[in-house]
Amino acid sequence: MDKIYDVIIVGSGPAGIAAAIYAKRAGREVLVLEKFAVGGQLGLIGEIENYPGFSKISGSDLAEHFHAHAKALDIEIRREEVTGYNLSLPIKEVICRKQTYKTYAVVLALGSHPKELNIDGEEKFKGRGVSYCALCDGNFFKGKAVAVVGSGDSAFSDAIYLSSICSRVYILTKSYLKLHNYSEEELSDKDNVTILKNSISKRIEGSDKVEKLYYDCDGEEKAIDVDAVFVAIGRKPETENLQGQIEVTPNGYIVTDNNMQTTCEGVYACGDVRQNLIKQISTAVGEGTIAGTEASKYALRQKHLQTK
Image (spheres, one colour):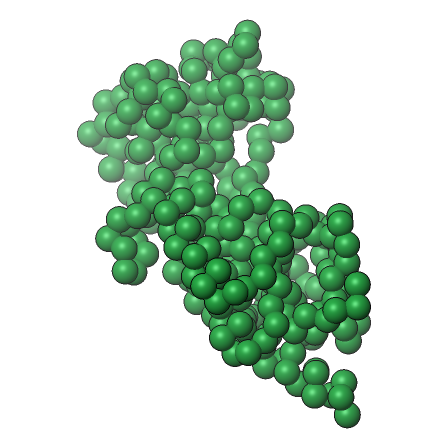
């Protein structure tokens, strides 16, 4: 393919769409590559109450707003899965399953995916009681007993949400709840929530659906009867295809400067894939704004050099 885009954005979550909007409005020729649906993880979120301008909106509805804005600007969005990159070249290459795209600047808005427990039964019962999104799947287990595995804020918020619709909620944590935005005391009035500390999940069993979760507590194997296991042990950035080309943290998050520039010139990163302190929709949009603006300026400089 001979066409060279000014800016290619990989990922169409809040960060990617914000980057695309700012680059497009700056007059650049923009391509967004997305392997799933526009909006990224927004489609997995129930109600959102902390995004400015919307006192309450569903994740899927907010994703549609983002998509509509992109379409109104005639931003090109293609359904493609990226398999590799050549980022050190003056004209960079984004390699997909269908074809390879060329560009002057790349914005990586890759997002992240849930970490898995990697225990027996987890893969078998995915979609049949094993879930990574309480807001998405919690209502399927209304009035039933469920387990939440995790120690951080996401596990805590999942447990709070599930306690309002499930008969019993167990929280399995390796040591104690490591909370930043909540207080464990908020569970004190929840009679149907039990915290199982020093518990390590070992295996999930059942016939055609989840029926039991086995765990180790202080060296003793125990089991609880549950209809679902919600895994909330963190997320993993989608940076496997970038190894050796840009700097990432030991956990795989992309390192950038304040302008969202990575350690590779002309390559920017924003949103959940970037090393940052707060991962919210609003911060992703802010980072995407910076990345799209800076990528746009870089592409313009590179095009000017090419024509000299």
